[in-house]
Image (cartoon, rainbow, N blue to C red; front, top):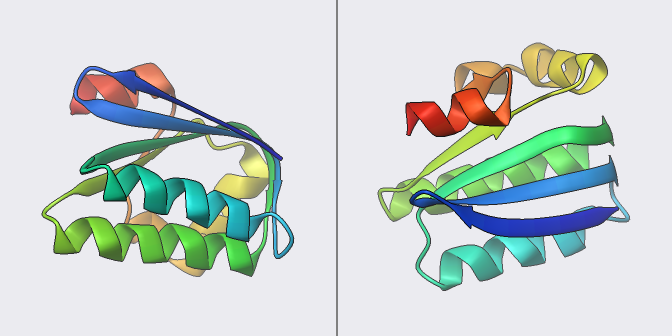
Length: 110
C-alpha cells in the first residue's frame, strides 16, 4: 500500500494505492491520526487507486470519521472503484460518509 498526502484548498487529500486490509490498516490509521493531530479537520480520502478494502480498513475509516466529528471536522471519500464502493454501500457507510465520484467533485463541494 502507498499513502500520499497533499493540501488542496482548505483540505488534506490522502490518496491510497493498493490494498487496505488488516496488514496495512495500522499504517493508514497512523497517517490519518497524524494529520488530525496536526490540527487538520477536513480530509478527503482519494480511493481511486484502492483495489481492496477489508473490515479492518472500514474500521479505520469509521474511527477517523468519529475523531474528526469530535473536532467539528469532516471526512469525504472520492473516486471509489466498483468493488470498494460496493463494500461501502453494503456496510451502510455510504449513508454516514459523503462519497463523490471524483476528487474534483469532492473538492468542489467543500
